[in-house]
Structures are given as structure tokens and as C-alpha cells.
Length: 192
Length: 295
Image (cartoon, rainbow over all chains, first blue to last red; front, side):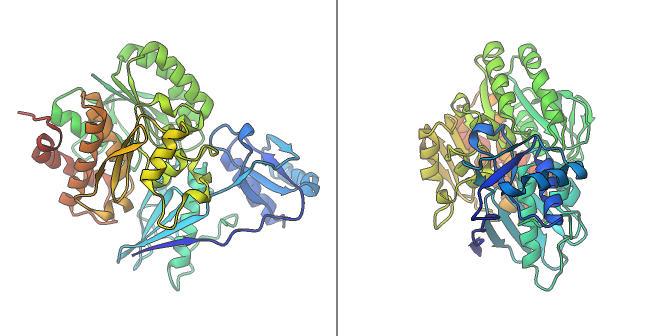
């Protein structure tokens, strides 16, 4: 049985406000910034930078322009390296939120974008991860497979790339679908 | 005729490894004698390529890899070494696999390869494919091996990573590989031949699907990490052996499926289980599938 699902579109942070972007040299810097800013109450979104600013595997953090100064100070105090800030969020794209679930009987497979995770229902053991193409994906495969979903460090906290981020989304969805199991590791930030 | 695979392996600060690839008795691959972790990704791809080389009695695949866990350091190291290695090895095919998808590095690599090995066929999958498409270089490649989700990325000219693929490409029944292969070709996002991996595999040449393969049907393979990588490894090895590209793609799909059927695939199995089943699948069927009969 294959179930297609799509999460409700998120409302952008400060949707009525003009947005700006923090740009980063590495995806894990963007993930660290999101985690840091959310932890102190900022409402931010991970997005692709505008095409003219992309180098390949890019992720930026969008937030209302008027919060730029305080947010930048928070990131500096936390040691998160920011490459730049731009006052224009035109041309950004949100991270794919397509989620597909396949029920294999004893096993549940969740696909988020280009990434998949497979969990044995009875034990919560991660039996496979797949998809993607960035170098942290084989690394995450070694770190996650064979361990229980409620014992592992979240892919988002172990990985470094957009593929790792998508695997985290599959991981969170798998946790949510394992009935009665408070499975997800708390981690540093919200995956959504 | 030699296959050169350019990729990474999942070890922090792992050194550059360069040399022929061997498949050890326990299923682990070794590069110039150094064992690398068995996982999904390039180890699965190389394992499958080794099995083809062994079956056809051709040169083992040659790897240029470095340790990288997603920080891009190993990726940069292999790109630095690539022109020199390619000039020395003179490969007939060069395959880019799990790498940090950095457009600038891929642009430089393709430019240099055109100078030192102008006749080599270029193949891309995984991060190598992401970088090639994002950099606008897809049409320079002979073969790419996306899955059904990734072909949506190839067909979307606005995005530089599959994580940003546009919603409108996801129809009511999921991605349509036939339509997306055509669109990817029209927008310059596809190699000459696409092998689109899925429940039904599609092979497209210049935007038109020329073959669809759905037997034997083993849905569990999609759940096993690395079974897409084994398809890529098979196709690369057949290509390096001199198979026409479409024949190489067809034989890769069929061999992967047949090995999956023979091993009784479940979602809890590993890519190395499939690699172990390949010799039987090849010896029993390759002559019939592709006309390459080994005596």
C-alpha cells in the first residue's frame, strides 16, 4: 500500500513582513543557525538562496528584516559562522515537503523528497536508509542502520547537507507514524 | 578499456585512495588494498562494477576516492587529483558518484577531462549528477542514473538540488518519468541517455523513453539502501566494457532485478547481499539479455 501525503503549506515566518536571508558557507552552519535562533524564540525558515547566489548544496535562513541585528548578534555569540546577510529574499525556494509512505508489512518506509528511511515496526529498529547523493548519506547509513529510532542522534544533528536534512524529515515522519512510541530524539531543533 | 570512478567514502579525514578495486571474500571492497566501509553509496556501486568486471574478465574498476562525511573536504581532494589521474589512466568511462555537489568544482573537472581524455564517456549519479545538472553540464554526459524523484530535479531548470524540486512536477500519481525525461532533455537537464530507476525502470535516449523494464518485480529493492547504486555500478561497468549505452542500461536494470529476486529481497537486507547474488544472475542471463556471452 502506498500513501501519498503532503504536509500543509507552512506559513512563512513573519509572512506579512519583508524577509531577508542569512547566507552560509556550509549547510550545517545553516542548520546550526536555525537551531540557535529557534531556541531563543525567532521564527525562521530554511530556504534555498536565490539562484544567483547558489554554489550547489546551499541552504539559507529567512527571517523578517527587522530582526536581523538581534539575530546576527545571537549567531555570533553562539559561534555560528555567517557568510553574509541580504535584505532581499526574492527568488528563494522552500525545501521540498513531499512525503510518501510505503507499508511493507513488518517494515515501514518513509520517503521525504529524495531520501528514505525504513524501520522495523515491531522493534523500531532502523533497517535501511537510502537515496540522496551527498557524502554524508553513506556516513548516516553507517550511523543509523541497526539501531533503534528512539536511540539514535537525529540525522539533522549528524549530517551536513541538504540530503541529511531530507533524511531527518523522513526520520521525523517515521517517528510520528510509529503509534504509541514517543520515538524522536529531542535534538537541537524542530525538523519542520 | 577502464572505468574510473570518482567519489568519496564515509570516513572522517580519510585519505585519498587511488587504484584498482577488489571485492574481498567478505563482501567488503578494497581500493589498492585498503578496505573501505561497506555501506550504501559508492561501496555498493563499486561492488557491483567489480562483479561485472569479474564476469566479463575485463579490467577491474579503478577508483579515485577520499574520506568525506559531508563537509566537502574529500570531494575537493579528489577533484584536485582527477586531471592527473585521468591523463595517466586514459579511462574509457569516468563516473562521478557520491560527492559534495559543488558546481564550480564540477565545471572545472569537466573542462579538464575534455582536454586530457576527450573521448571518455561521462557518467553521473548521486552528488556528481546533482552538480553536473546544477552547473548546466548535463548534456556533456553520456549517462545519468536518477531515481524517479531525482528525474523531477533534472526536469526542473530552477533548482540546484533535489531538496528544492518544485511541487508542480509531482502529479497526482507521483512523478511521471516519461514526461519528466522529455522535459529534462528539452531544458538541458539530462544526459544523452537516462536510466531512471524505479518500480518500473525507464531508459530514455535524448528525451524519449526507448525501454521500460518491470520484470522481475521486486518492490523491496527500493527500501534497501544502495540498490540504486548497484544499478549505476552495473551500467558503468557494462559501458566501460564496450556495451552500447542503452544495452548497458538495460542489462544493469535486469541484472539488479534478477539478483534481487534470487536473494529473496526484504527491506531489512543490505546492498552487499545483492552484490553477492550478482554472479549467478550474470552467468545465467547476461548472454540472453545483452549478447555478451562469456565462454
